[in-house]
Length: 94
Ligand code: SF4
Ligand code: SF4
Image (tube, rainbow, N blue to C red; front, side, top):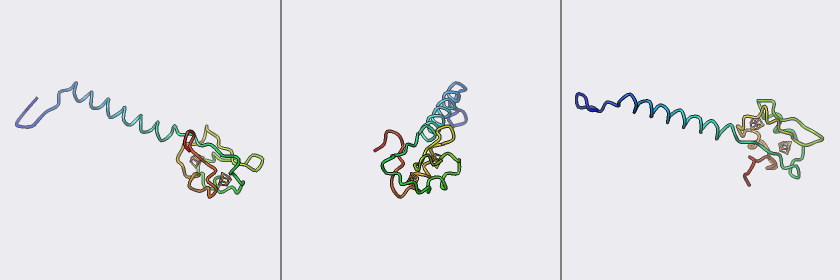
């Protein structure tokens, strides 16, 4: 609809735009938070840098190897950067 020379969106159009925005936000949140971190046990030397780097308390050492608690992990990726041995990966990534 055009009113006073400007385009005015109808109520259904506004609603569709709002739904699409919410869907986009939900997909973005899922993409970031849905990533699961895994430990490559053959690379982990048990230095504990990832334990200290994680501000969610999601990493513990089990028998000298890092162990990620998926209930606490948000998938932020801080521990991946902290590991000098490249022993942490997002699941499904090389
Ligand atoms: S930082 Fe890397 S090598 Fe050190 S404990 Fe964590 S996963 Fe293992
Ligand atoms: S991805 Fe973030 S929240 Fe998950 S274990 Fe690593 S530092 Fe902690």
